[in-house]
Image 1: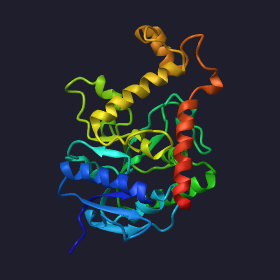
Image 2 (image 1 turned 90 degrees about the horizontal axis):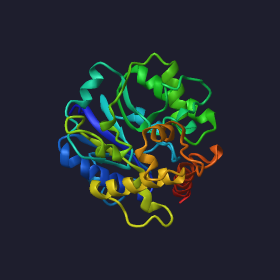
Image 3 (image 1 turned 180 degrees about the vertical axis):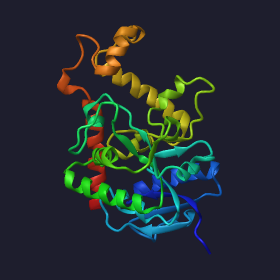
Image 4 (image 1 turned 120 degrees about the vertical axis):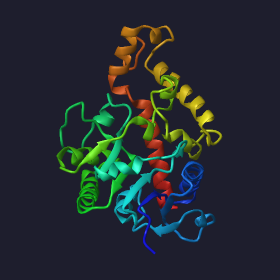
Length: 297
């Protein structure tokens, strides 16, 4: 029997991340019931393995195991999903992009920050920021096989914890045909739903760290649905503005608002430049610490 042409893969090691993958899978099945879904993980004997079409062992366990696993997909056209995702609509003709392109990803958020402008050695224009590696659509080909091998090599040699700086570099220098997905296929800033008009977009893939906040210290109850997620994202947005000294009145002033969005600086109460991004940096560090503990468990 031939393999399905299209399919989804998750890469999740450890019980907590497998549980997140289960939640994402359930949302995917509601809207895309006929799509094949595989899991790459660190063990085969776990409850719920039969929910996936196939389960594969990761070649090695480390925080960026997805870089090893993406080229191992059995599908001709593959959608890789991070485990902290929710699927809220059918994928429809998303896979047909691979009839013309070899790779498709969406821009990351916080593009004015040094974190998301960072490369692993290659300088690029501001207008070429990092693309987020939590949702990656690709087709099997010699070019993508070479691309993934180089991505893994550049990441390993970068000395960085995040894989996206190396991804940014290779996309800049590679001749691979890639497409930038619209944000509804990797919706990182869920509060965009508050701004979109009815015909602006069809949100399809939600990708938010709020879905795994419960794994960190003192983060409270687990978030598993879009209404709760949107409430928490709104709270996080208010917190972001308050951290740089923005009042509600500031956020109604267009000139101040634009200055805050582009520079992360609002008023005399604002944080020093060296402290901008501090809250997000602490959050990322917490996720990395948790991930490392999972690797050692």
